Structures are given as C-alpha cells and as structure tokens.
Length: 339
Image (cartoon, rainbow, N blue to C red; front, top):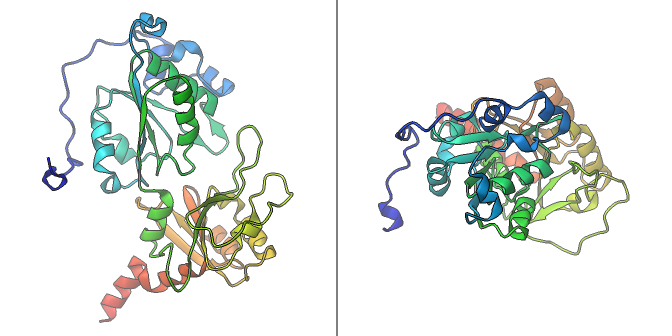
C-alpha cells in the first residue's frame, strides 16, 4: 500500500475492545501490573521479583521463544504530533512500560485490555531505578511478551533508549526503535524559534547538566554539526563542557536544566557568551499551558523565577531566540490583528 493511501490516524477513536480477558490474580503482583506500586517499590528503587506480571512460568525456562521490545518515542505530548507508526504500535500493544513524560492524551490511546506499568521518574522520586526498569523489560520479553517501551520525545535523545537497547542486544532479545519528535524540536517550533538559520546558527547542540544515577557526570551533549575541534572538558565534577557550549554561531538546547537555570546562564557567560545573548525557557511544549519566557543570559533566571516556570521545560540559547519576536504564534497573531 502506498503511504499516501494510509487512512488518517484514528486519534479521536477508541480502539474496539476485544472479549474480556480473565481477571489477574489478586494481590500486590496484580496491582503492580496495572502500575499501582507498593511501599516496598518506593523504598527500594525498583520492583521485587513478585511484581513482574505473571505469565507462563515455563517461558522463562526456554519453552517459548523470547518476545519483542519496541522502544518508541511518544513525541512532546500533543497526540497530533505522534507518528503513525507509534500510534499503530500503541493500539496493538498488550504490555506497555511508559515514562512520566508521556502525556495523558497519548496514554488514553492505549487499548483498555493492555497491561501498563508506569516506570516514570520525577525529580527526587524514582519508583523504579534504571536498572530495575531494564530488569523488568528483560523479564517480560523472556516470557514471550511483546513489550512497548513508550518514552516521551525521541527514545534516543536523553531517553536512555541506547542503554536499554544495549541490554536487549546483550540478552539476545529482538527489538526495534520508533523515533519520535523530540522535545527540542517541539519546543523550538512551538515558540517560533528556528534551531538553525543561515544568519544565526550553523550548529545545534543538545546538552544536559543532569547527573547519572551512579554519580558520574554527563559531558556536553549531542552535536548535529561540529564547527571545529573540541576543547578539553572542564575539571568541575558534574559539569558539562561549558567551553564547547559557549561557542559562537550555534544554538544550545539544554534538557533538565530549569532547576539549574541561574548556574547554567552564569557558566555560559563565564566561558565567553555575552550577557545579552538571547535565551528562552519553553515550558510544556505542545501541551495545554505551554509558555515561553524570553530574555538574555543576564535576565532569564529572574524572569523564569518570577513566572514560576516548572518542568517539563527546555532552555534554548543563541541568537535564533530573538526571531521569536516575529515568528512566535502570538507575534504572528498580533501582526495579523494590526493589519
């Protein structure tokens, strides 16, 4: 079938429910299979063995071939920005492990008969450690389950898709990726900020100052195009490569940095960016309540604090930010009203 012949995605239709399935056994295991969680989970950072949804116990002994895991990006939150392939994977799912950043509107597309487990993390609260998520995913696949690992944005842009795929590959479990529209793409487009522009930016860097669970620092980010040789990373433990992030003629998108906004802006200034470099925070990109706070590296921390910006939010730094004065939806509406 030609791609142009595909039916429109049935985003507003609920999938038809199949015949009722047998009720799962009562108890903590059944509760966790529906994403309930227990006090033990929160204290231990991961699920006890008994919380893995029950299947054929003989499958773990090799009586059944391993299942399959799909690592899918759910996009930034707006269900209209979900890809057709991701939508089809969601509607065909019978076991979903989803992150906190998957929006309620997209979770509503999961078939009612599918089992789901919320393995998401919020600041300061990890119901499951990353190791426990991988352990659960492997255990389900070894029992022959077809698992949809649903992540916000794109699974391979600060979504730990690579780590989880490595574990699947090492275990010999088949898997595939479904890319999603990244949070950076959505935040920039929804705010009227082009990430690249011939007059402003010839490179884009995605970075985070977030620390790994084992305490190691995440260095720098991902560069789509490299304008020159990389400088040595700074000596500060837990810090990104500020010298690389402060290079001219590039756009920097910082994930998971809103709580460190004042420090981020100060470090970029210390490593060479001018205090009047345009910068913005985009909160809840593509979702209800989306907001953009624009300023400079000097003024943005105070402006964001006054607006009480909270996550999920991204920081965008570079001269492209000033284009939002003309390209942001609100600016375009104001221009249309003036005409």
